Image 1 (cartoon, rainbow, N blue to C red):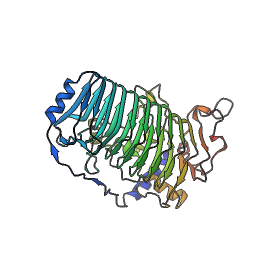
Image 2: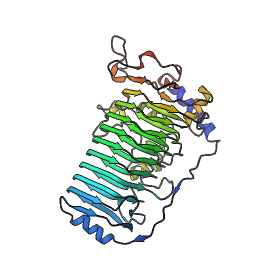
Image 3: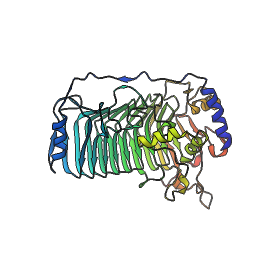
Image 4: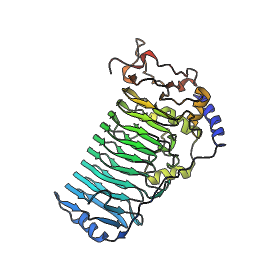
Length: 430
């Protein structure tokens, strides 16, 4: 792949001559704060199983995290998303706004959480966690200094995120990681680096959401070196549009590699169904299906300095892992991906010229932006001994209307770059 990365580095030289895009987005809600911190902290500390923590109407400042640990059947309830606001803009202790750990059957509903130093709401090692009518946000202009995750359930089972909003996360607004039995529905995610992200999670349904004005609308990722691996993800009836926000992710993080203008990116995940979605108005790609190998190779060409690596570690976000091949349980190639019955539209013809891939499209496609692109890097087991496509690595495109498809053939230095959909891209066994 040496020629590919030489080409991209040359394109990068062109890119730095173009003025960098800056976001003009700023979230500045009017707030009139009161102090009830001691009362709310006491409620969290003393709550008993099967109880309700009532959050009154108003805007409230907190200097430390609100923590729920080892509890069962608890509801944390406010007066409404726009009526009860918990702000951590003056936080002095802890990283999260609300931290939930080792719990069962927890429901959060009817309030907003703003400006935590790290993640606005984090839940870990919890079975049964529901977020409903919750807004998570960072106020002011978008910044790398914003917390990484708005909603951050990780290593959880039976997760429901519905009728929520996420704004301003420097990694992902709505995130679920290393979890099983997940539903993400009827939400809005905007002005984040990634609007919605499913990472190394299984049995996930993402539907009836709107993701817009992010760097990347929706990410479905599988990364190495983690305790669980992703598969069986369904994404349908979503409206993913105008995700052209300049990337303000922490340098060296995985999401900092996502080019502005990305609708959906599927990375190394298996058993993914993408159907009945509307993808619109992206300046780099509506849908990209890629392997971890292309990201690792690009990252190696542009290795970050020690400062970037330290920033990633402090923020608790995932950086690139050049030792991914040592993970015997990790498959860096996507497979069993079906993309069917979606609508694609684009009011743009000029790609994002601050993106290496946008510049690549200009060199290869002129004034055209792909609807669906794959990197074309094939797994060693891509073909069966009889020469047929291994169904474990099939990518199926059906009934998506007239689309511009691109196969980069990145594993062969772009020699087989094509816009033709090969006949064997769909596997009957899917």
